[in-house]
Length: 107
Image 1 (cartoon, rainbow, N blue to C red):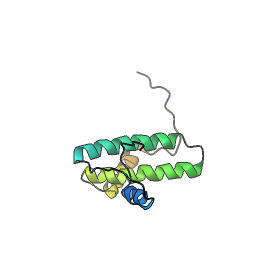
Image 2: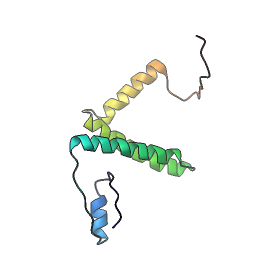
Image 3: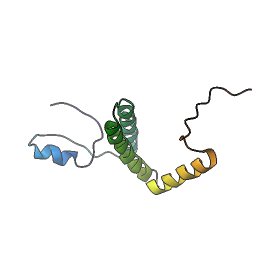
């Protein structure tokens, strides 16, 4: 039986069960849950970075966004509040639309 030891989406046990396969899961405590969410975020960002098509990129970005929703909840906020912070920062410092690459700044 392969060992995964990773956080999975909520319906994965149901999907596995429907295949008739045996499996083992556990429910994480809050600290471990946050730690595993952070690991999963790194995994999904890496998968995004390795994409070569727009379709694959959108799929991976959707996974990152799902993790952003979960992480915002564990930090006592909502994705809407995170979006407001993003908007405030964009208003003060700008976004990344102009493709500006800073090379150096005089001391």
